Every structure is written in structure tokens, then in C-alpha cells.
Length: 637
Image 1 (spheres, rainbow, N blue to C red):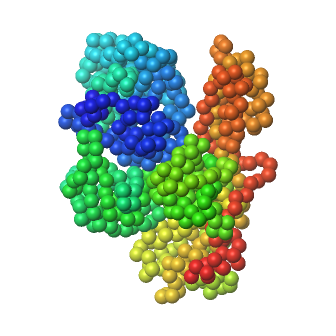
Image 2 (cartoon, rainbow, N blue to C red):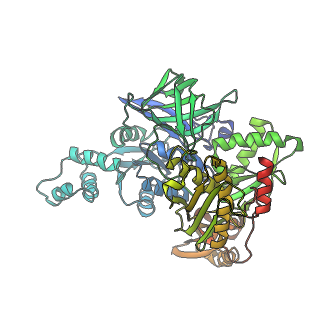
Image 3 (cartoon, rainbow, N blue to C red):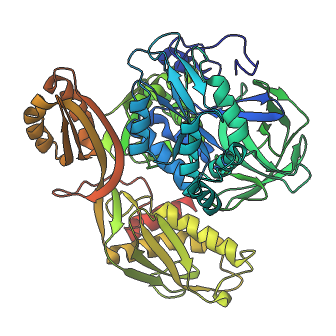
């Protein structure tokens, strides 16, 4: 931003005066907590930069922007190198085929390394990297970066060798020494393969001193593909962030892919849960040269803020929906806690405040136990919990305490189960027939819903189309599966509608919505479930002479070492550990290694629990108990 002329002084995360870390908490803690948007111009290219957090507790902020990116710059420290979070991010960028440049930052800091970090990148992230220059003066304020050019034979040879792996024409020319590949063609092919996320150029530099930043800027404009969109085409955009304005109104951050949205337009937006609403846009701001400025419209290729969309949510499609993508790119939170106001009279205000925070971060999964009047939040870590506590104090003037953090388990079906309730036959009290089958699915596949019924059995006088009927039932199925046989969310299964019936004109959408949970829980009981706990993959770097003391501690914490390697006086251990034991290991590591041990951990998978199975208190209307469920339904009606 400084090099582009948007700001006059370079900010510092440590000093709390960066442009995109505008929250008081971000400045206080020296970390990015919320994603922020700035826009600047490089030549004839407009760059919309979305700055996201690097701390693993705030991975949800990264997840929300992935579907709106044309490219990414993955920042790695020249001192700390590739960390667990870096590997998670890179795997996701590769899976989504998002063109990615790598910037190795902090070459001016003591302990900075270039060759070691580059080797670290190729071994742990991807072998398809192209160093775009050389770093010099590492560890000092004079550290710099010199880009390679056509005259650097080793660079052009290495680039040709890498590009030839994905291009037969370059391979043929590369093999034929008599006709070397022209440098211009290599650069064009580098841009093409970078744009297809096949290779990843690597730059070195320092954000503080500005070393290497000009080369990175050139790389962004030359190597990352520019977004394409017709401002005169049909309106299509995605909401990737929602916040509240000064008066408490919702503000939607939208990346426009096509068309133009103007003030006073009536805008349709669509949610993954089947919502299809229309609201009038009352105000527009567009990010331009460092800030959001009032405009009459926001067009394709731009990022804007929209007012007036009262029920908008993160992930909503504005106008014409784009191709559906994965609902979640990263693992869900694995921790849960109960939030309690210090003043009992503030329970209502606390619920309102947490509901607003859940708008900005849906993954905190606000739940309320109506019987005990308790509020539950899902978390990624202790830092996130501390930030929520401070936010409630500073922004909402509510002081809260948290009960002990517990682990969030999940349930997986272990067999196939079916159930049906027929219209007009006891004990079915609703004017509908619903039959469902539950089948286990592959780990990581999530919940899938399908129809195996004839179209004529669907009440199309109630629903506009079969797709609307399917979406409505799927929403009810997913909501019901948030709490399985033992209260945990059910994952990795396929639910199929096998029977459907109605009586015209009495049957309504409510009949299907209220009957489905009873049938689904009956089918799930017949299928059976197993409770699984989250498992983290850990990486330890410790002095070799401390391994003997660490091994029994790992055993007591139910950690399972998978690989061990010793290099001189240092030893690395990789393995699996239950999520609820990670904090204990981190606390003990310092004493066990005389302060020299380093630990990284990241969620990896779920495993069935051995021993006593934990049960989570239900906060729904308990469709496992027909009597209790119908009592709640009748009261609500």
C-alpha cells in the first residue's frame, strides 16, 4: 500500500498501527483478528486486497474469503519458516486451485534464512516452486532482494525444467539443446501455469523495510490472473463478510463477479439453507485507493459494502448464484464453552450481543439451552475465547465469564437405518407421509441429501418446484442432525427420502417440516452411531536428550508418535494426539525441554472414542422422545 501510494507511512503489526488492523483489539494484541479490505492501483490494474488473519484461532476469517479470490499471496516468515497453519492454508489453496504466490517475509530479522526456508517449502508445501530472485544481507536492516532476469542462466534453466513438467512443447524444446526456449516464452508460460495453480513463484523481502516489495507487486500484476466480469451482464456476487454499522444496521461486503448493483435496486439473494429473499439496496460504498467511498453503484470486479439487506448472511449469493462450492474448506471448531454474564440481569443483552457476533462468525455456532438458560459457543482456541470476552466488554458493555472449555465430538452412523410415518396412521399426528433412510458415508464427505420418490408424491401446490421441496427438506434434515443420538452433530452420512405423501389441500409445508425430525431420529436409531473425538496432528522439535522424558508424558496424554528423526542435538517427533490433550502437552513441554521445545498442532481427523462415551445435553426439542417433541410442538403452535 505504501509502494502504491495509498498510505504515507509504513505501519507495524507490533506497534499496532497497520492500516488493515483497525480494531482496538488488533492493535492491542498485534495480530489480525478480522479480515479487512483495501484497494489500490498498480499501473492499469486495480488490486482489491483482502487481508486475513494468520492465527489458527481465526481460520474462519480466511475460509469466508476463499470463494471470492482471483489469487493469493501466502506469507511465510524467513525466521520461523513453514508452520502447521501454513500447511493447512496451502493444502486448501491447492485443492481449490487458487493461483498462489509465496512471499518469504522478515529477511531483515535475526535468524532469517533463505535456502533453509526454500527447502522447507519444497518438502512440506509443494515441490513446484520458482525462486524469483536471491536474498542478500539476511538478518540486517540492509537485507535486500535481487530479482533474476534473462541473463541468469541457472534461473532460466530451473524455470524451464519446472515448466516442462506441465507443458510438452517446452519439454521438447528444453530437451533439444540446440533450440533453447526464449526467455519471453518462459515468462508467458510461467504466468499461464501460475494462473492454473500448477507452479508457485517465490519472492523474498521485508514488509518493514520494503525490500522485495516492488518485485512482489510486479509478480501480482504479471503472474496472477485478473478477474473477468461484464458490468453490463446479469448481477452476480458473493457476500463474504457481514458487520454492523454505527446505528446497528447490517453492512454486507460483496465481491461482484458480474453486473452492476445500484442504490435503490431491489436485489435478490440466495442462501445455502434455501432462503430466497429480495431487499432494497439503500446505500453503496466501493473500496477505492485505500478506503471505502460512497458511490451510486458497485460493478463487476469491484468489492463494495451494501446497506439495506436486512437478513443477509455470510456466503449468500447476490443475484445470479455462481457454481456451488464446498460449504467448509477447513475443519470446524473442536472446542466448546458456556458463556455466563456476571450480572444475571444481562442474559437477554448477552444473547443479542452473541447473536450479532454469530452473524460475523457463523462458526461460533451460538446455541441456547432453553431449560437451563445457558449459551454455548464453539471455539478454535483460547485466544479466540479471550477476544470474544474483550469484545463483549468493550463493544457491548457486558462482562462475562466462561466455564471450562470442553471438546466437541461428533457422531457417525455405523449402519443403515430406515423409518417411515404414514399419513392417517397412528402414531403420526401430521398430514404427511415421510420415509427416510440413513446410510454411512466416507469420512470427510459431510451430510448429503437425496430424493428417491416419484414426482407425483410431492405436493407441488405447496412448493413451487421439486428443487424447492428438496431444499426445504434438506434444511430440516441438516438442522435435525446437529444433535444426534448422544447430542453431538452427525456427520458423514447420506439421508434419502424414500416415501412421500400428502392430502390436498390440507397438507402444508409445516407438516413435512415437523414430521421429518421424528422420522429421521427413528432411522438414525436403527442405523446406530459411534461418537468420535477430534484428533490433532502434532510436530515437536526438542533437544534429543529430552526425548526419554517426553515419551511417557505422550503416552499418558494418549498421544501416538508416528515418526521420529534425530539430526545432531535436535529431535523431531510427529504424531497424533486427542484435541483435549493439546493444551496439556503445550503446558508441560517447556519444563520437559528446559524451555527449548517447539510444538505445532493442527486438526487432522476424528477417531471413535475408546472408553466411556460422552453425552452432550440436548438444546433442541428432542425428537428422540416423541412425547417431549410433540409437547414442544403443540406449545409452539
